[in-house]
Image 1 (tube, rainbow, N blue to C red):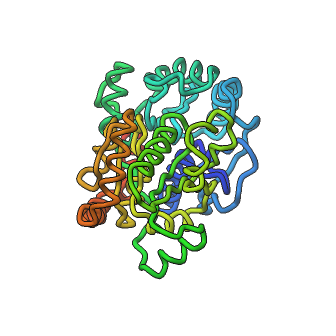
Image 2 (cartoon, rainbow, N blue to C red):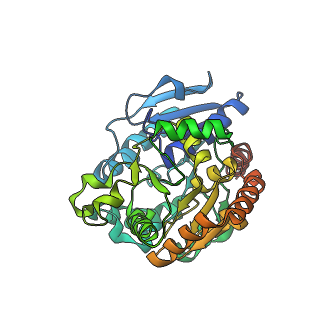
Image 3 (spheres, rainbow, N blue to C red):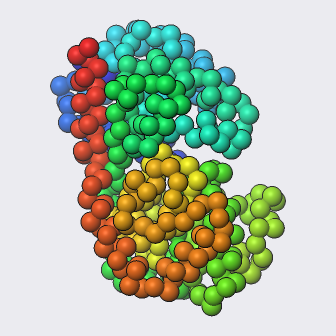
Length: 374
C-alpha cells in the first residue's frame, strides 16, 4: 500500500503546531507499519532526520507553499500530478489542505476552523483562501480527522458535514515533558535570570492566543499585589512591534521575558519549573501546551472557551479570556493558594495519562484502514 503524506510543515528548527502533529503521527505510522510504503511530499529541501525509515520515499515539490496563490498551485497541480505519478492509494494531509482535482482518496486533519469565527485575526489573503477552500476540503475529504469533540461539532455545524464522516482523536505530548526536581528547577531559572517564581505562556503569537490580554492581566496582577512572580513568554518579543509599546509600563516590561523559539527539551524544563501555565486563548482546537503542562505536573490557568475545558478538565482553573480582570484574579489566586496549586499539579499528572501519541497514531491508522477498505 502506498500512503502519500503532506509533510510540508516538517521544518528543522521551526517546528510548531502542524509540524509537531505531523512529526509525532507520521513517525509512528512509518515505524509501526514497515510493510507499507510512505511517500512524503515536501515543499523545500528536507532534513534527513524526517525520513523515519527505509519505507519512506521523500519527494520535493516546488514551489514552497507559503502563500495562498502558491497553496493553490501546490495542491491543485503539483500534489495532484505527484499523487497520480506515484499511484498513491491514499493521501493523508495533517494540516487539512487537500487537492480538489485529485481522484486519490484523501484524509484531511482539520485541527480547527478559527478563521470562520474570527476572520479579522488573519491577513486578508489568508482568510479569503481559508474561508473559500476549507468548506470545499471538508466536502472533498473521504474522511476528516479533528483533534477534539469541540472541533468535530464545530465542523459539523459550520460546514453541514455528517458527524459519521469525522473522527475526533486527541493529541498527545512529547515524552520529554516530565516533572523535574528542585535543583533542576533552580538551574533552569538561573539560566533565564528568573530569580523567583514565574508564570509561563507557550504558543505562536497569533491574535487568538490572546497574549495581549494576558500581558495586561499580568500588569494588573502586579499592580494589585506585592507578588514577585514574573511572566515568561515562549515566542517572539511583542516589544519589537510599536503597536504594543504602550500596553504596559517599562517597569512591568522588565518583569516579562520573551525567550523566542525553544527546542523541545529546553521548553520542557521551563514548563516543569513554572508555577503555572497561563494559557488563555479565546479560540483553540485542542491546546497541546495544556497536555505538556499536565505531564510536567504544572498547574494550569486556562481560558474557558472552545476546546480548552474538554482537554484540561479538572487540572485547571478557568477564566474568561476576554476579561482582563478575571485573568488577573486567577493569577492572584494561584500565586497565593499553594494548596490549590498542588491540587492542580496532582490532577494534571493523573489526567495527562489520557493523552498519548501512540494511541493517537493508532486511531489515525484505523481511519486510514477504513478509507482504504471503501
